[in-house]
Length: 171
Image (cartoon, rainbow, N blue to C red; front, side):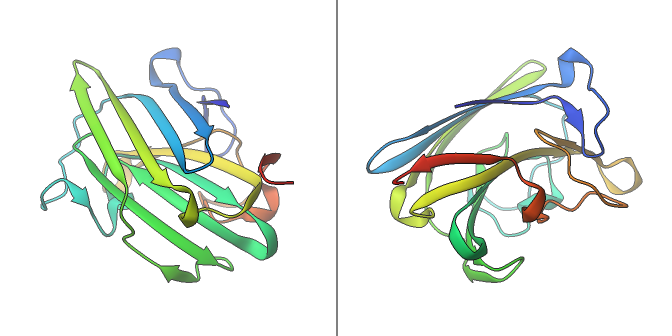
């Protein structure tokens, strides 16, 4: 599945050089996520590359995969090799955090690319809906982009009821 994050969180089209492209391939043992995104030069987290709590406060691309009964996995990857993998049951109800995954990332000029592999056991058995987001900037200059915008007064990436329907995995 190919996704293009080409809109702001509230639905305005992005310039082509700000578009993020994501490839999602669900296999029997793992999910492969490939990201091609603009690099804005935000400061990296102040920890070594690897699992990083609060990565959403940095330059990041996020993928939310939702199964039955609001069980979902949130995958976050950043340009400096940081990631965050969470399992949730119910909106914002984290049941497992900072799970392991494999990530390689590389910054090349004004873009960065990342390839992640996530063990299938960390994902909903059947993925019913999903959405993807990109965030960069700091404080009042924070920018939020979406594959499919969701309604609201501000960006809130956990509005699961508005995610587009898909079926990945076992029926």
